[in-house]
Amino acid sequence: PYRITLIAIYAILALSLNLILGVTGLFDMGHAAFFGIGAYTTAILMTSFGVAWIPAMLASIVMAAFFAWLTGIPTLKLRGDYFAVVTMAVGEIARNVFQNWMDVTRGPLGIPNIPGVTILGVQFPQGLPFLGLSFFFLAITFFICQRLIFSPFGRILKGIREDEGAGVEALGKNSYRNKTYIFVIGSGMAGLAGSLFATYIGYIDPSTFILWLTDFIILIIMLGGKGNSIGSVIASILFVVLREGTRFLGLPTAIAAPLQQWIFGLLLILV
Image 1: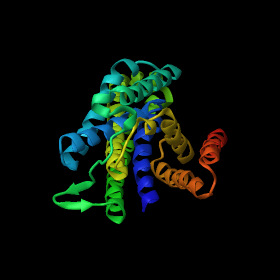
Image 2 (image 1 turned 90 degrees about the horizontal axis):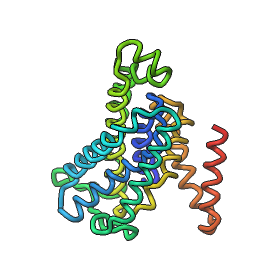
Image 3 (image 1 turned 60 degrees about the vertical axis):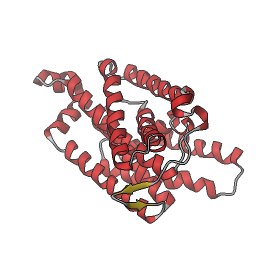
Image 4 (image 1 turned 120 degrees about the vertical axis):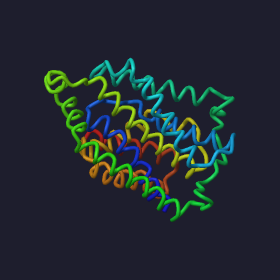
Protein backbone atom coordinates (compact mmCIF):
# COMPACT_ATOMS: atom_id res chain seq x y z
CA PRO A 1 0.00 0.00 0.00
CA TYR A 2 2.89 2.42 0.70
CA ARG A 3 4.17 2.47 -2.87
CA ILE A 4 0.67 2.44 -4.38
CA THR A 5 -0.29 5.47 -2.25
CA LEU A 6 2.82 7.30 -3.46
CA ILE A 7 1.76 6.47 -7.03
CA ALA A 8 -1.58 8.21 -6.42
CA ILE A 9 0.07 11.28 -4.89
CA TYR A 10 2.67 11.59 -7.66
CA ALA A 11 -0.04 11.00 -10.27
CA ILE A 12 -1.98 13.99 -8.89
CA LEU A 13 1.24 16.02 -9.09
CA ALA A 14 1.86 14.83 -12.66
CA LEU A 15 -1.69 15.66 -13.74
CA SER A 16 -1.33 19.16 -12.28
CA LEU A 17 1.91 19.86 -14.16
CA ASN A 18 0.54 18.23 -17.30
CA LEU A 19 -2.11 20.98 -17.48
CA ILE A 20 0.63 23.62 -17.38
CA LEU A 21 3.39 21.98 -19.41
CA GLY A 22 1.69 19.31 -21.49
CA VAL A 23 -1.54 21.06 -22.46
CA THR A 24 -0.48 24.72 -22.42
CA GLY A 25 3.21 24.37 -23.26
CA LEU A 26 4.49 26.42 -20.30
CA PHE A 27 7.82 24.87 -19.29
CA ASP A 28 7.35 25.24 -15.55
CA MET A 29 10.57 24.24 -13.75
CA GLY A 30 9.40 25.35 -10.30
CA HIS A 31 6.42 23.05 -9.75
CA ALA A 32 8.03 21.43 -6.71
CA ALA A 33 7.70 24.79 -4.94
CA PHE A 34 3.89 24.65 -5.01
CA PHE A 35 3.95 21.00 -3.94
CA GLY A 36 6.09 22.14 -1.00
CA ILE A 37 3.84 25.10 -0.18
CA GLY A 38 0.90 22.72 0.04
CA ALA A 39 2.80 20.29 2.25
CA TYR A 40 4.14 22.97 4.61
CA THR A 41 0.77 24.73 4.88
CA THR A 42 -0.93 21.52 6.00
CA ALA A 43 1.95 20.56 8.31
CA ILE A 44 2.10 23.95 10.04
CA LEU A 45 -1.67 24.32 10.45
CA MET A 46 -2.12 20.81 11.84
CA THR A 47 0.92 20.69 14.16
CA SER A 48 1.04 24.30 15.40
CA PHE A 49 -2.62 25.32 15.38
CA GLY A 50 -4.49 22.03 15.66
CA VAL A 51 -6.45 22.60 12.47
CA ALA A 52 -8.35 19.59 11.09
CA TRP A 53 -7.21 18.09 7.81
CA ILE A 54 -10.06 19.24 5.54
CA PRO A 55 -9.60 22.99 6.25
CA ALA A 56 -5.81 22.51 6.23
CA MET A 57 -6.01 20.79 2.84
CA LEU A 58 -8.23 23.55 1.44
CA ALA A 59 -5.80 26.14 2.81
CA SER A 60 -2.95 24.28 1.07
CA ILE A 61 -4.75 24.49 -2.27
CA VAL A 62 -5.50 28.19 -1.77
CA MET A 63 -1.94 29.05 -0.66
CA ALA A 64 -0.34 27.20 -3.57
CA ALA A 65 -2.75 28.86 -6.01
CA PHE A 66 -2.18 32.29 -4.45
CA PHE A 67 1.61 32.08 -4.72
CA ALA A 68 1.23 30.78 -8.27
CA TRP A 69 -0.83 33.88 -9.07
CA LEU A 70 1.85 36.12 -7.55
CA THR A 71 4.52 34.25 -9.49
CA GLY A 72 2.54 34.42 -12.71
CA ILE A 73 2.05 38.21 -12.69
CA PRO A 74 5.60 38.88 -14.00
CA THR A 75 6.65 35.46 -15.30
CA LEU A 76 3.73 34.54 -17.57
CA LYS A 77 4.62 37.44 -19.84
CA LEU A 78 7.83 35.54 -20.64
CA ARG A 79 8.04 32.74 -23.17
CA GLY A 80 10.15 29.66 -23.84
CA ASP A 81 13.50 29.39 -22.10
CA TYR A 82 13.02 32.64 -20.21
CA PHE A 83 9.91 31.29 -18.47
CA ALA A 84 11.71 28.03 -17.62
CA VAL A 85 14.70 29.84 -16.09
CA VAL A 86 12.56 32.20 -13.99
CA THR A 87 10.33 29.41 -12.65
CA MET A 88 13.45 27.41 -11.82
CA ALA A 89 14.59 30.40 -9.76
CA VAL A 90 11.18 30.52 -8.04
CA GLY A 91 11.60 26.87 -7.08
CA GLU A 92 15.04 27.59 -5.58
CA ILE A 93 13.70 30.62 -3.69
CA ALA A 94 10.93 28.49 -2.18
CA ARG A 95 13.41 25.78 -1.18
CA ASN A 96 15.62 28.38 0.51
CA VAL A 97 12.63 29.76 2.40
CA PHE A 98 11.78 26.24 3.60
CA GLN A 99 15.43 25.79 4.55
CA ASN A 100 16.05 29.04 6.42
CA TRP A 101 12.75 30.25 7.92
CA MET A 102 13.48 28.46 11.17
CA ASP A 103 10.67 30.02 13.22
CA VAL A 104 8.00 28.66 10.88
CA THR A 105 9.39 25.71 8.90
CA ARG A 106 12.06 24.54 11.42
CA GLY A 107 14.53 24.67 8.52
CA PRO A 108 16.57 21.51 7.90
CA LEU A 109 15.10 19.92 11.04
CA GLY A 110 11.79 19.57 9.21
CA ILE A 111 8.34 19.21 10.73
CA PRO A 112 7.76 15.84 12.43
CA ASN A 113 4.68 14.22 13.95
CA ILE A 114 2.22 15.55 11.40
CA PRO A 115 -1.21 14.15 12.39
CA GLY A 116 -2.98 11.74 10.08
CA VAL A 117 -6.19 12.42 8.21
CA THR A 118 -9.47 12.45 10.16
CA ILE A 119 -12.72 13.35 8.39
CA LEU A 120 -15.94 13.69 10.43
CA GLY A 121 -14.44 11.55 13.16
CA VAL A 122 -13.31 8.82 10.75
CA GLN A 123 -9.56 8.20 10.72
CA PHE A 124 -7.61 7.26 7.60
CA PRO A 125 -4.38 5.65 8.85
CA GLN A 126 -1.56 4.49 6.60
CA GLY A 127 -2.48 1.43 4.62
CA LEU A 128 -5.70 0.67 2.77
CA PRO A 129 -7.77 3.52 4.30
CA PHE A 130 -5.32 6.22 3.17
CA LEU A 131 -4.83 4.41 -0.13
CA GLY A 132 -8.56 4.66 -0.81
CA LEU A 133 -8.57 8.34 0.16
CA SER A 134 -5.64 9.16 -2.11
CA PHE A 135 -7.23 7.37 -5.07
CA PHE A 136 -10.49 9.21 -4.40
CA PHE A 137 -8.69 12.55 -4.79
CA LEU A 138 -6.78 11.20 -7.79
CA ALA A 139 -10.11 10.36 -9.46
CA ILE A 140 -11.46 13.86 -8.75
CA THR A 141 -8.27 15.46 -10.09
CA PHE A 142 -8.36 13.28 -13.20
CA PHE A 143 -12.01 14.15 -13.84
CA ILE A 144 -11.34 17.90 -13.51
CA CYS A 145 -8.31 17.68 -15.81
CA GLN A 146 -10.26 15.84 -18.48
CA ARG A 147 -13.11 18.34 -18.29
CA LEU A 148 -10.66 21.20 -18.67
CA ILE A 149 -8.72 19.64 -21.53
CA PHE A 150 -11.80 18.87 -23.64
CA SER A 151 -13.58 22.16 -22.96
CA PRO A 152 -13.44 25.37 -25.02
CA PHE A 153 -10.97 26.63 -22.41
CA GLY A 154 -8.81 23.58 -23.10
CA ARG A 155 -8.81 24.34 -26.83
CA ILE A 156 -7.51 27.82 -26.06
CA LEU A 157 -4.72 26.29 -23.96
CA LYS A 158 -3.75 23.95 -26.81
CA GLY A 159 -3.75 26.95 -29.13
CA ILE A 160 -1.32 28.72 -26.79
CA ARG A 161 0.92 25.66 -26.91
CA GLU A 162 0.90 25.41 -30.70
CA ASP A 163 1.09 29.09 -31.66
CA GLU A 164 0.31 31.70 -29.04
CA GLY A 165 0.39 34.60 -31.50
CA ALA A 166 -1.34 33.33 -34.62
CA GLY A 167 -3.36 30.61 -32.90
CA VAL A 168 -4.85 32.54 -29.98
CA GLU A 169 -4.23 36.27 -29.89
CA ALA A 170 -5.11 36.67 -33.58
CA LEU A 171 -8.55 35.26 -32.72
CA GLY A 172 -9.08 37.87 -30.00
CA LYS A 173 -8.31 35.60 -27.02
CA ASN A 174 -6.28 36.91 -24.08
CA SER A 175 -3.43 34.40 -23.81
CA TYR A 176 -1.91 36.01 -20.69
CA ARG A 177 -5.19 35.72 -18.77
CA ASN A 178 -5.75 32.11 -19.82
CA LYS A 179 -2.16 31.17 -18.95
CA THR A 180 -2.70 32.71 -15.53
CA TYR A 181 -5.87 30.68 -15.01
CA ILE A 182 -4.23 27.34 -15.83
CA PHE A 183 -1.05 28.16 -13.89
CA VAL A 184 -3.14 28.89 -10.79
CA ILE A 185 -5.35 25.79 -11.25
CA GLY A 186 -2.40 23.44 -11.82
CA SER A 187 -0.47 24.84 -8.87
CA GLY A 188 -3.52 24.51 -6.62
CA MET A 189 -3.69 20.82 -7.55
CA ALA A 190 0.00 20.52 -6.63
CA GLY A 191 -0.93 21.99 -3.23
CA LEU A 192 -3.49 19.20 -2.80
CA ALA A 193 -0.81 16.60 -3.59
CA GLY A 194 1.49 18.27 -1.04
CA SER A 195 -1.19 18.12 1.64
CA LEU A 196 -1.73 14.40 1.05
CA PHE A 197 2.03 13.79 1.03
CA ALA A 198 2.60 15.60 4.34
CA THR A 199 -0.13 13.73 6.21
CA TYR A 200 0.82 10.38 4.72
CA ILE A 201 4.56 10.55 5.41
CA GLY A 202 4.09 12.35 8.74
CA TYR A 203 7.32 14.31 8.32
CA ILE A 204 8.55 16.87 5.79
CA ASP A 205 11.80 18.75 5.28
CA PRO A 206 13.22 20.96 2.51
CA SER A 207 15.21 18.13 0.88
CA THR A 208 12.02 16.73 -0.70
CA PHE A 209 11.01 19.88 -2.59
CA ILE A 210 13.98 20.33 -4.90
CA LEU A 211 14.48 20.77 -8.63
CA TRP A 212 15.04 17.03 -9.08
CA LEU A 213 11.40 16.41 -8.09
CA THR A 214 10.20 18.72 -10.88
CA ASP A 215 12.52 16.91 -13.31
CA PHE A 216 11.03 13.61 -12.17
CA ILE A 217 7.48 14.83 -12.86
CA ILE A 218 8.50 16.29 -16.23
CA LEU A 219 9.93 12.90 -17.17
CA ILE A 220 6.60 11.28 -16.26
CA ILE A 221 4.74 13.76 -18.48
CA MET A 222 7.12 13.29 -21.41
CA LEU A 223 6.82 9.51 -21.25
CA GLY A 224 3.05 9.58 -20.79
CA GLY A 225 2.58 12.06 -23.63
CA LYS A 226 2.19 15.83 -23.37
CA GLY A 227 -1.42 16.68 -22.67
CA ASN A 228 -2.37 13.03 -22.07
CA SER A 229 -3.92 12.58 -18.61
CA ILE A 230 -4.18 8.80 -18.86
CA GLY A 231 -0.56 8.62 -19.98
CA SER A 232 0.52 10.71 -16.98
CA VAL A 233 -1.15 8.27 -14.58
CA ILE A 234 0.33 5.19 -16.30
CA ALA A 235 3.80 6.75 -16.41
CA SER A 236 3.49 7.64 -12.71
CA ILE A 237 2.91 3.96 -11.94
CA LEU A 238 5.94 2.94 -13.98
CA PHE A 239 8.35 5.50 -12.53
CA VAL A 240 7.32 5.22 -8.90
CA VAL A 241 7.67 1.43 -9.10
CA LEU A 242 11.08 1.88 -10.73
CA ARG A 243 12.11 4.53 -8.20
CA GLU A 244 11.05 2.50 -5.17
CA GLY A 245 12.28 -0.76 -6.71
CA THR A 246 15.92 0.34 -6.63
CA ARG A 247 15.71 0.37 -2.83
CA PHE A 248 15.23 -3.40 -2.72
CA LEU A 249 18.37 -4.38 -4.66
CA GLY A 250 20.39 -4.62 -1.47
CA LEU A 251 22.90 -2.01 -2.63
CA PRO A 252 24.58 0.47 -0.26
CA THR A 253 23.02 3.94 -0.22
CA ALA A 254 26.18 5.42 -1.75
CA ILE A 255 25.58 3.25 -4.82
CA ALA A 256 21.76 3.00 -4.92
CA ALA A 257 21.13 6.78 -4.97
CA PRO A 258 23.51 7.56 -7.88
CA LEU A 259 22.22 4.46 -9.73
CA GLN A 260 18.65 5.73 -9.39
CA GLN A 261 19.61 9.15 -10.77
CA TRP A 262 21.60 7.52 -13.59
CA ILE A 263 18.59 5.41 -14.59
CA PHE A 264 16.25 8.41 -14.65
CA GLY A 265 18.80 10.51 -16.53
CA LEU A 266 19.14 7.81 -19.17
CA LEU A 267 15.36 7.48 -19.44
CA LEU A 268 15.04 11.25 -19.87
CA ILE A 269 17.56 11.19 -22.74
CA LEU A 270 15.81 8.25 -24.40
CA VAL A 271 12.34 9.82 -24.06
